[in-house]
Image 1 (cartoon, rainbow, N blue to C red):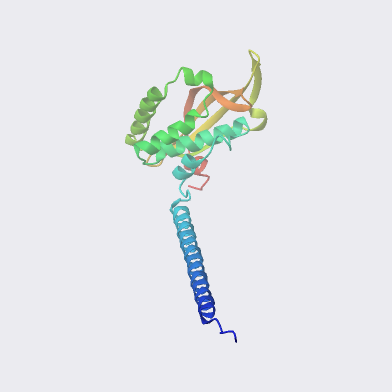
Image 2: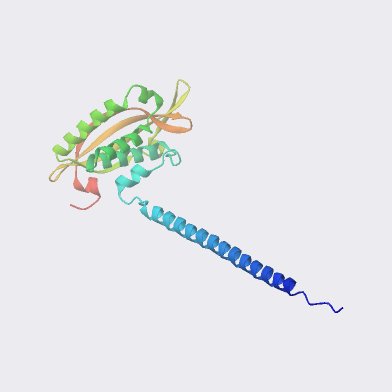
Length: 221
């Protein structure tokens, strides 16, 4: 007897082919969806990062630069450089209108320049109250720090006291004391080498003497 072609087998193979095709399409679509989701997620992450970076404000004013200065990384290396930074901080504090938060941030920067000895006898709250009062009086008197300078080279004296390396240095401030009047004020500092950094051990106010506008600003009157 002649064999009869098996039609059901051909149909089953056809159905299996279609099913595989559908599974392939579903799998492909699923992979495409995953790639699309990952791409969208990555895009939003990049946009979020760029937005955060754009919101980080680059310091532009002297106040912002002093607040942002990282003294743990970029501490001044010499007594003269320490005094120059001290002058910058004082000029900004006494001349600039700022919020209480900004004032406290600058005060914190100043205290990072203090030796442990000075910090122990000068609490932050006491210093804050005293400095705040001095700044307010300074502004009421319509004074302004025009410039400052610190001793350099051989003018800086080094001594060893109780096995501690110390430096004696003077800083001078030129101030406008109102109108066309100018004065020069001195401060004497003792710095001590502490963990390889020059820190302020103590200071005292020196004399004040009249000065000219040219001395204060370097400009011809």
